Length: 358
Image (cartoon, rainbow, N blue to C red):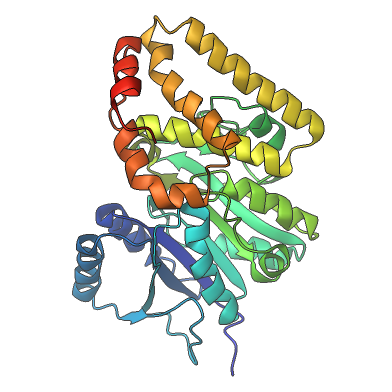
């Protein structure tokens, strides 16, 4: 079989969101300088959302080829979209694995992960692939990620793993929430590429393995990055290239749930890649934060976060992550949807006493 060795497979995962997905796809259609194919992975969305996407593609006269993760295509057609539906909502990391497997099965040389809430500037992926072509030990690369609703402010510009293992509440990137300027240019090393926007070299992904099933919502990109480095690859961010992320939409869609998952999967990350000292320090900071917030619970700024952080720690200790979240994400969504940034400690007591526990 003739291989598609010069092609880029673009894996776009979506779940119950057609509008953002359509915007993302529309931006990807401008990647004309780089030979590529889009693999659209449906993370078991309700049929309403996939139908809306299909209708949009039909109007654009773009063909859809329905595939399985092990499908072998004799000749890849870059003018069509390859659609794959997961049997369940696997979450962020594991949800992408079916798309990765399809790309590996069909000999794509490079695999891009582009989340469905991204807007991709014209020919961005061409420039990232050129970086990979010019450096054979570069396993993965990300662009500079900007806030979509504040496009002159950097959301991601590289990261230092130490910060992630210290459970910092704010963004752990070492170029983050800063106004973009000529200072932030060129190619820089990073401890991890960002999952929402990265391009990987397939040969390194084969050696490192796919996303870890113990992750469901965040941090899986950092864990995978460490395995890419262990098999001899380097990681970089191209600060000359920008992509735009709808961060506020993603986070504000369910603020309390995001806090819960962020803390829980940061603990899982520490367990997975942290040294003994990382674990002692990281777990200690978690306990101290919870105790401090409990002491300051008379202020809604802190009381509104206690329940999420408490359950994050409890479920981590009970090993309720990964498969647990894949089975229970709807009840988790429902439970935390009742909490917002103004929730008082009195309401939290009512919630804890009267609601079904997650």
